[in-house]
Length: 250
View 1 (spheres, one colour):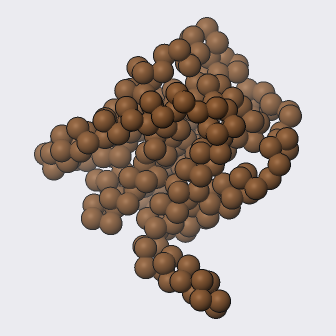
View 2 (cartoon, helix red, strand yellow; view 1 turned 180 degrees about the vertical axis):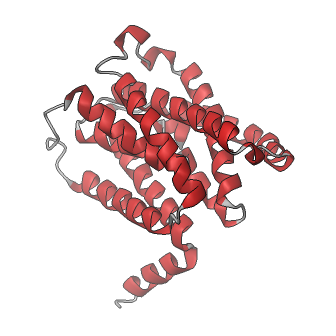
View 3 (cartoon, one colour; view 1 turned 90 degrees about the horizontal axis):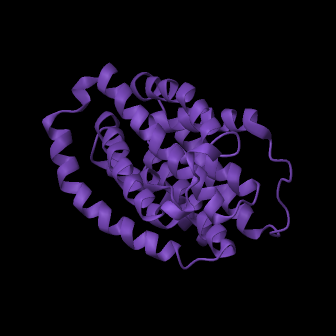
């Protein structure tokens, strides 16, 4: 999924939180996402912006905002109940993705918002990423609202996700060093060899997509991400029960 769209690894990977506590599972997802992004960026250098173009229209303003947001998100991860936040955020992603797929493609925001808006969006993603390991959602929604091309969107989203995942891991290492226990490193060693081949497959699929199909797939994956976060918050049984109830005409 992430190799194809550039985002969403942690939202689907959040299903591992059925068997892992969040204080272990979220850092594991951050680490695997970092490996995933490094491989994708290495494969897609031609789509990435040179550093001199990172400000103001590139990933730099988003990263600046993320620097502020990530510490807040990590405090939420370790100090506050997050179930309600997960439900709201997952529901928003699901509704937004459905709306984006059915609305006429010509409808999108024409005003780019400038670097101040980009900083705000980046900070929002940083807060979300600090407690879900999924910082890219806010930026993906923002670029989708502005109808960015697939190369333009990816040149912002991927460096942003990579930067915030690394920042989150560094903060965790300083603030909660017990996170990186032998159990963590064992799980990382077992899972990273599975992640990277999937990344390569996704990147190869991405190269064959038009801008239109890329946006459509990105919205579908956002919806899947929303479902993943809802499952993380409330479990699979209530969601399946709700869908079954609706299908039965209840």
